[in-house]
Length: 599
Image (cartoon, rainbow, N blue to C red; front, side, top):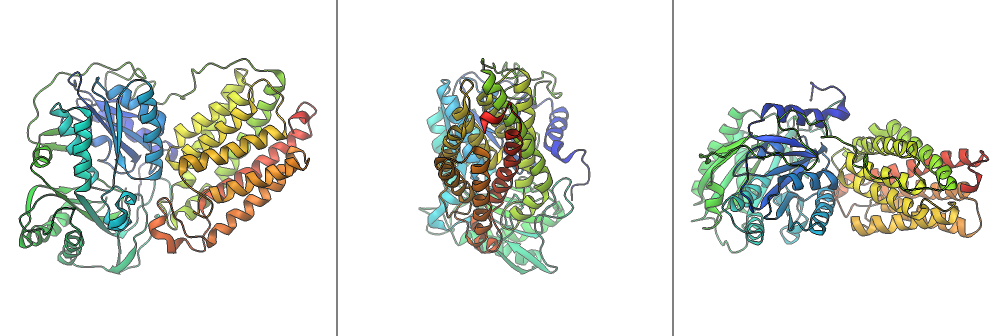
């Protein structure tokens, strides 16, 4: 378990501060993550990688010459926000465009995709690549649904070496995609990981058993088997990967492959070497020539006891990129040419010393202008702030339970992310109100803060929800029940559009759509807002409970669909809890003469 921490909610930020201070020769902290401290040639493509904290050396430890130009680092097991990715990319880019590379998880896809759109709109050429190397997470015919695990390293290394060689963005992207298509990984674990501040691991494995096909975010394995010997573990790993060769490879014999035997957190290096001894023999017997094998901790999951094997099937153009020199805090190969220290970027005004920047964790909307608002809208903003306070309190009360529900078939981080997001939204809303914001602007500020602080899929989606409500309410008109209903309908549409989810997929949509429909019907029937919201909250609660009978079709829970039967979806449950809490704020507002008109 993670024993040394202060406030668990601050763990990721404090870890990044210490990392940057320890490696100031190689990396420099910027808002949202780190970038190279060494100079980058003008016009070179910038490879920016990233994901949640808890996987060191991924992602910050892979920033340096010959490897990534920057890393956006999210909260524990949660993707960095679009704002964080954008800030890191702006600080890392040098005129040749940006490749954003990340593991194929819903939150990362959402946030990196949004950052790419923003960069493109600003005139910075940008492409994205989601790594899909984990063979256990989807069938070969659905490889685009596979998650990224330790194969991240092979893809990141390929892209970065291509960029270092001066290739243009289109070529860097082509080679990175080729590397991804030729990379396969498979893992086993003997125990789950325990997050900072938690009193139990995200999943457990019975004594004498191991989990097969686990995920790096604490997702449980797809099956269990008796604990093998080291040689038996090696045989399982190798045989699984040799069973699925990349397109165009008929036989492993005569092939060359980069090999990564990765420790997931608490398997000692000596144990890894014992396993690799057998891995190397098995690959040689199969006719595979290994090239620059890597044995060690490269993509971890806190204290998870487990290992994964990655085979990177090389081609004549991929092999020189895999073997090219690199120097990063956690990865060194060959000898890189000495370069001067880089000039500090003006993006976010990062520290030039390697010490934590004073601006590294700025509120993303702290300096955003607050437009003029009417008094009725400011009165509604006070009600909105009360609702945000009720949301924060409710999420805090239920965070552990939300994490427990999420851990049944997912990674257990939903409660943590919701708590961070709701706290940030309430704080941003309070600051906006102090500056005279109307309801629309207050909710826009809260939306940006929630998405930025929470990261992950839920962070992006709650940002969409609050922003849609803010847009519907505006800053000038007196909000009424119809405007709120229109905002909720827009929120539901936005969540489905961005998250690509529909009712029946076992996501928050299964509670959000019934809530929106019930609210619209009640408001259309003439009910005042508080009463209509009460009716809709009851519908959301029933719909959230009903998700226990659904099988997930999206997200991290999808590979563990059967395990989730009988347990409701954490996102649907949290939405139902939140809308019930908001009803309390609305009901309180109707009792005040100054707020009656908003209800």
